[in-house]
Amino acid sequence: TDCLKRIERAEPALNSFISVTAEQALAAADAADRARADGRAGFLTGVPLAFKDIFCTRDVKTSCGSKMLDNFIAPYSATAVQKLDAAGCVSLGKTNMDEFAMGSSNESSYYGAVKNPWDLTAVPGGSSGGSAAAVAAGLVPATLGTDTGGSIRQPAAFCGITGLKPTYGRISRYGIIAYASSLDQAGPMARTAEDCAHLLGAIAGHDPRDSTSAPHAVPDYAAELDAPLTGLKIGLPREYFGDGLDPAAAHAVNEAVKVYESLGATVRDVSLPHTRYATSAYYVIAPAEASSNLARFDGVRFGHRCDSPEDLIDLYKRSRAEGFGEEVKRRILIGTHTLSEGFFDAYYIKAQKVRRLIRQDFLDAFDQVDVLMGPTSPTPAFDLGAQKDPVSMYLQDIYTIAVNLAGIPGISVPAGFSGARPVGLQILGAHFSEARLLNVAHRFQ
Ligand code: GLN
Image 1: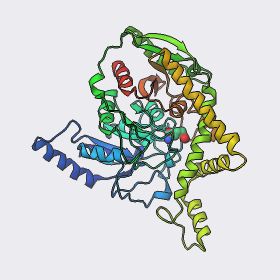
Image 2: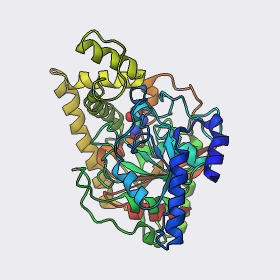
Image 3: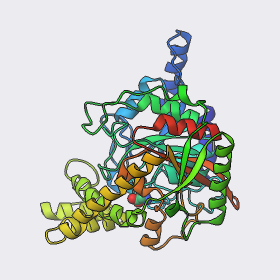
Image 4: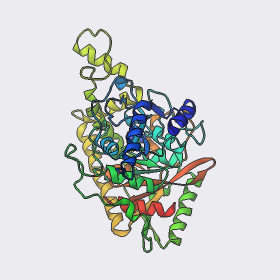
């Protein structure tokens, strides 16, 4: 009830939730109380949280931030949601997001922009902007987000919280509405790495319903949080400190690195030479996959359907024209174009080759160092409405996007401020090194 009261008070200003499920939350809280009374409580029993509205939640509207799914009540829950339900967590509802997770500012949501709790004239970042804002404002202690090109880490940085994008395959994608299936990954967003460790432990693992989920055993992430950092080798990718980086964000990262040196780490310069091609490759691959994934929203089986269609083609055309917003349409068109005959080799295949080189850059770097550190985003949160041109918005993703192309894990931790707005330190590791990342992040907090 405390969380519900806080949500009621803060939401008119923040708009971080699309649905608040008060009734279900109270029932779940009662169940948690009973479990506690019977001695059946686990570590997460009764912990309030919320899910980005991209996670299917049984009997609850799952809109993905789109008019297209404004009337969609999911008939089942995503695996990650089921696992947290089973652990006794109490979901308070579904958080706001960029439409179909396409965006870096949460301004493309059909349900309106989310405000940054640190400064209501600033964006919270995106696409998991509602999730980040809800945690930063203290409405819930934790949320789940998804990250296709930075959507957990960048809003975490903009809102001064901690957000982890795990290795591709670490968490089942079953029941998460697909944006770009080869890049999408769910992850925890919370105040601290410690909280993220507990959530990750509960949701990670193989799922027979997602053939891309990894069979690797799930370690006890919380057990390794305090491990000493003596001898930790940190690499600073020189490409992550280039032109366009906010000086205060750079300063915050350098100060953080000094803290690590004082904890016994050593630091060296490394290079990720193909970084400059990452944004271009991503904005070919992600829209290509999106154009295919979003073909299912045709007005027939679920989602928005136009009024009195003349025939089937009219039904498809008008349902999609009415249901999708501008950014989603732009990406579907880009994706359809790059996948079309005559352009496929020049764009899609080329982008896949670049993706391979980017992955190799990281593998080479992790032969030399244990983790990489840099800024999460080139700037702190920008003003609402400030990024009008889609390409300048895409360029915001420069430090986060390559991570998804490579499939490696990354975490953003609060590192200080630029003016009154928070900035993040991003820590990257080799595939399945989440325990190490959480340990490194925790020792800083
Ligand atoms: N900003 C990126 C995009 O618009 C990343 C979004 C995400 O990670 N879902 O595609």
